[in-house]
Length: 109
Image 1 (cartoon, rainbow, N blue to C red):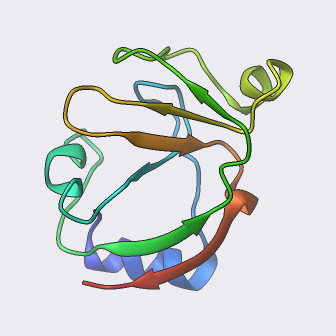
Image 2: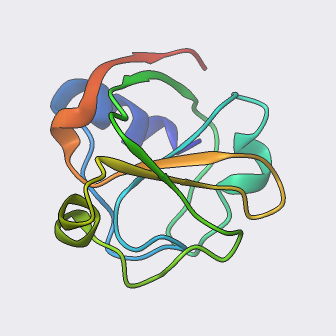
């Protein structure tokens, strides 16, 4: 979930990886629209718009519920993975570190 303004910008120019998070700086995705209610809670998170997104997660590295804040695209790739997934306790999340892994985006709210 994000703000309406940011959602429109993402649809227009694409995602930009974040700089921090449970699994390091990346692009985070929930599995369902409902799950975004408890996930968009960081200091730079916003609410009001929901995007439906097709993501090529490739080979997924599954992590514990605390993940690893030091992860980045280089580290994940060097371990033989394309993305990371973890469940912090409120549902599974998927993280990609390269915006080219986002195949399509559609605003649904």
